[in-house]
Length: 190
Image (cartoon, rainbow, N blue to C red; front, side, top):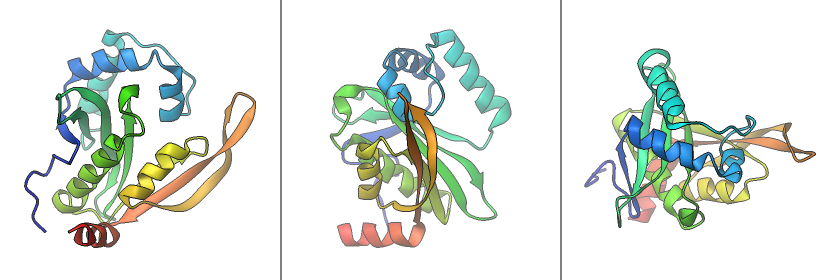
């Protein structure tokens, strides 16, 4: 299976993770509480550029040396619109966990996240030789669920009533994709 560029899709490219760019963007994206609630179950917080940069540098250097972090840039304008990462990699099992966040609202629901996920899956399965990639998504985020399904993920289970938002309980949905499933989808796409 040959690819022209491992880090480029149809709409986006995965870029090297730049802590300055990430800190600037994340502190701006954090002003959007809807983005924060779609991305994490923690309570919403506002972060300064310095605080974001300090936290991410600590994670990269000390806590998670095998974390693969990428910025998501549009191909058209090279604008950073989000981030995506592979984490919790268990090489002995060939398993990893992916998370993605598109902070720029203008790019929501237009295929940019799905394209970024497809590019990352190519990296995970061909470069890192992983067997499966997993993720979780909140039940109140059907747009993300559809995006993950378009990238080939299937629902594998759920944690009922995991998160409480505005007085209502929502499930945490677990999804996954195996390398064989990804390979079949790539072959079918031509």
